[in-house]
Structure formats: structure tokens, C-alpha cells
Length: 512
Image (cartoon, rainbow, N blue to C red; front, top):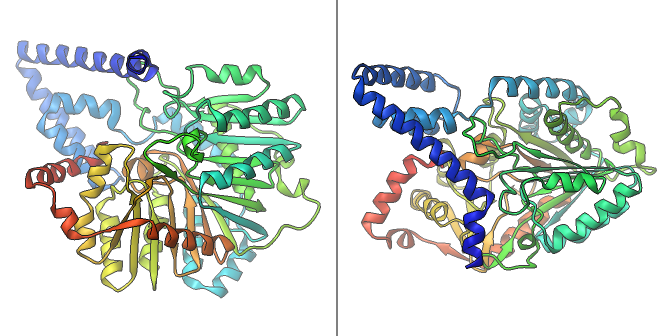
């Protein structure tokens, strides 16, 4: 009874109900007006055709465009209204201008590491081209002089997070999608409060939608009272908004510019298995120590200045070299990168597809969701057809059943082409990692679904010849041993009606 009451009175339910009422009211008004004035129907049809032409000419994913075109042409009044409120993947013009202004200034702090790129070109031209792509189109440089450590679980990563926070003497930056009161965040919060009282510059960003059921509405005010500078990204209000789709899905922690963490691990107890949700929760992360942390520092400051409408005046105080007495360890090549809905460049997806397409022997993948577009499907199929060992490890227990079923609807066409798919038996797998040919890997926050690839702010680390690459592969092989390999018969067990239904739903997958 308490859970039902909490759900009904929760902010997420209130916001959803308020938006639904607004939609119903507007639709009722438009439908009533349409019945009274017949010319309106023709006008709406003309507007629908015009909007469809605009969508067709946009630089966005074809699957995303087709889904909206079908909805708008099938039910123009409803389709147009829903599209204008929820369908536009890009930010509003004022929002875009503000973020572009911040980025244009801070991008100057990420100059091209020409010497490192030239050295990489001499070692491996294929890897060089991937790194060059990230620099040319996402403006994040490649580094050496950076040590890497990969974490197979949240439990492994958590002690090192606490240690990095305890050792901070100058500043702490944290940016997370989900934060929830509990053991994990309680331990972190105790350190943040203490560090803030000691004069450490502590800054915290959380996504308001990601925390809508886990934190009170104005929790950032509590943080500020404890001396922690805190803001929420894209506040969720009970009013229809065109930028509701865009969320900050990144996971970033920077301590004194020397140590940085990212991956799939949020700040809630299930991520370290202090509580059980959907069986055992398997997630992964990575720690950088060294020059590569600078890119994560700039990523955070870009988001911080955008939300606060501020401008950093002394960036030198955040540079890692300022607080490092001894030289950093050189552990291969690392290239942190960010992806955003600001532009038409799907950096995260392109890095994934390049790794698949350029693999010579194998590519192994961790992803909690598998809702790929046609380009990704073809890339996976073609790699497997050419003899590359392509394997995808998915959850065995879902966190969202509809998304789980939809993900499974993609299994059959992939398996038929030679892709091997596994489901992790102990529970839910939330990791987002790729590894190929014993030399390349990427670890980050980017799922293989439309929201991560096209609508959210995301981040990751591209790795070449780093010790973490071997660790990612070993983890994937261990995880496969705990997983069930899926065959075509598994896919065909479902009744024909359900398979047909999922096939139809897949058409609208980009809208979910």
C-alpha cells in the first residue's frame, strides 16, 4: 500500500499526469474546432505535409524520421502535437546557441596532440583513422601519459572512488544521471561535505529526470547548504517542453584533475549490489590517471558553465600537471570523448560501428539494450558474414520488459548472419563496452539504443594498447561463461502473433 501511495504521489506521476492533461485538453480543443470548421482539416493536412517534408530533409537517422512520418500522416492532429512537444531531437535555438558559445570557448583548451597522433599513425593506420575521426569531429584529443584501470563491477570500483575523493585537495567534479540516497551515495556525500568544509571546490551535476524518483525535487538546495555547489540538468516541470528528450546520461568523476572515472555506474545501491534489483547487477567502469583526465575536466566545465550561464576565468588551476609531482604513467593511448544532441554527428554510434567494421578477428560487446538502427544492424551482420567473431552479451533479467522484448526481436536477423548473442544468467547487465582484436576497447555510458545514440549527452573512453583492453576482454569471456547463448529456435518459440506485434512496434522504436 505504501509503495502504491508513493508511486501515485511521486513527482514523476504528477508530472506525467499534468502533461497528459495538457495533451488531452489541447487535442480536445483541436478536434472540436476541427469538427466545427471543416477547413481546419485541410489546413492540418497541409501543415502535416509541410512538417513531413521538413523531417525528410533533416540530418537525422532515417529510422527516426520514418517513425515520425508514419505517425504524423496516419493521425495528423495527434501526430503533429506530439511531434512538436516530444519529437524534435535537437535543442531549441536559444539553448543551442548558449551551449555552442560555451563549447567554442572551452574547446580551445583541448588542442590537438599532433605528436601523439603522428606516433599513432606510424604504429597503426587503421587505429589512427579512428582517433583522427574523434579529434576532427568531436574535438577531443588522444593522449599518452595516462594510466588505466578497468572495473568488472561496481563493488570493485567503489573503494577506488572513495579513495580518490578522500585524496582530493583542490577540487572534485561529479556528474551523474541517477543519484539515490542510500549506502553508496551516503558514503560519498559524507566525504563531499567534509571536503567542502575544508575548502575543496566541490561541484555536482545530476540529471533531474534520472533522479525524479530517487531524490526530492529541490535536493540541490540541500547540497548547497552543505557547501557543495550543485545544479540539476534540464529540470523536469509539469509543463510540456520541447527539450524534455535531451538528458545528461554521462557518468563523470574528476578528482584534482589527476584522476577520472566513467562507465555505466551511477550512484545508487544496486550498482554495488547492496540491494538486489533484477538479480545480480553487473556494471563496469574505468579509471584514468594522468593527462587524459583533462578532457573529462573540460566536459564537466562545459556542462557546468552551460547550466549556470557562467564562464571559468582561471582554467589553469584545474590542470592535472599542476598537482602532480612525478611524471604520469604511460599506458598506451587513451582518448576520452563526449557525444551530444547538439549536432548531427553521432559520435558514439560511429565509434561503435567503426570498431565493428574494422575488426579483423573479433569484436565483443556489452550492452543492456539492443535497439539498433538499420546502419548498425547491417554493420554487425556484414562483420559476422565476413568471418569476424561478433558476440553481444545482454541481460538475462530485464529492468524494462518492453525494451527487453524489443531487444530480443533483433536477435533472429543477427543470429542468422552469424552474430552470437548471450544473455547473462545471474541478472541485469548494465555495462556499455566494446573490445576488438586484443588492442582496441571503449568503455562509457552509451547504450545501443536511439536515446543514447541520438538524444542524450554521453561520454566514453577509446583505448588502444592500454592494459584495460586486456581486462575488458577477460571480463567479457568470464561473463559469457555465466551466460546462455541464444539460438534461432529461442527466437522462434514466441507465438506468431507476438512476433508480428514486436515487428510492428520496432517501427516505432526510435520514439520510445
